[in-house]
Length: 162
Image (cartoon, rainbow, N blue to C red; front, side, top):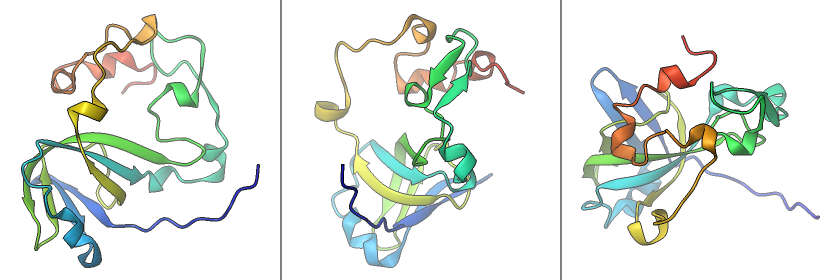
């Protein structure tokens, strides 16, 4: 396999504070927001910069992160930000889009303040929703829908929850 070099460009950052969650898009990329108003949700691709370390990038297996999981899990069977490439994907509910200002207000995103944004895609039922999906028994009791996740007791799922 021949790996060709490539470059990623940061298009903006996450502003997470007590006031709420904002995606601030850099000026050169703001025109890409045209047509986004009207979508209820977006897929946000971001870089887990706080966990971008060689030791975490080489961690391919983890020890039972979830209470009901097997004793070991491959990192590709988790949503952990510790990965060979610390890319993360979040579905987020859009509250408002201000195209000229490059601001997308979100209901919530599971990214830290200052997190670099790599891409935004509209959530589309025709490509992002699967009618008959399945998952392993150890996670089968997790919420089926994004909206139900907020009320779910996620802390009780993790072995090292605090």
